Image (tube, rainbow, N blue to C red; front, side, top):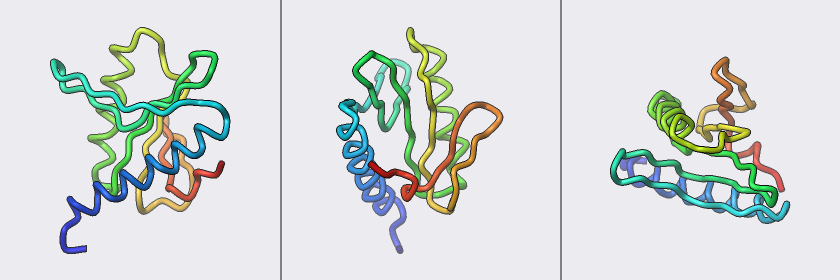
Length: 113
């Protein structure tokens, strides 16, 4: 707990693992997206068989939610096909919250295959 930066990487890896399990249980695929030119980065993209997809950002602290929101919105603005769902997995939440901007914030415990 003395190094939250490192713990953030571990938490992200755990969330990606859980997202992959959930995605594969419905025949979907999980990807990561980074665009070097613009700096746009998304932790997870879940693509289902018909081509629809959702994007999810992962952060350990609720105080970093604004940065993840910005990342999701940048990706949404440049994507040719719009995502059906945008979410942020965050520690400190015990329920799923739907915000006015269509972004859901939820705990890792909300992931159930």
